[in-house]
Image 1 (cartoon, helix red, strand yellow):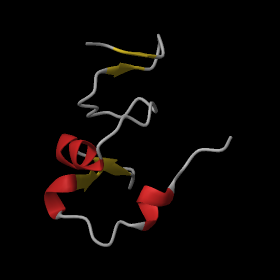
Image 2 (image 1 turned 90 degrees about the vertical axis):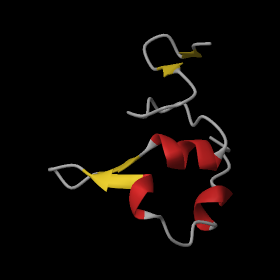
Image 3 (image 1 turned 180 degrees about the horizontal axis):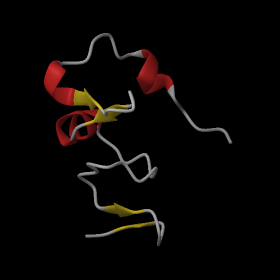
Length: 61
């Protein structure tokens, strides 16, 4: 795979408005956090500010 996940090790503490927990207990990142991260991970995030479409595999402009 060879993907670089080094940015995740640099996360020290998330602000309360950068994520929320679903009723099932999953952590969901908000648009604020995803913009702060600075790139699209292409996983089809619920609040993706980059416009990634998981079905087509492309970023909508």
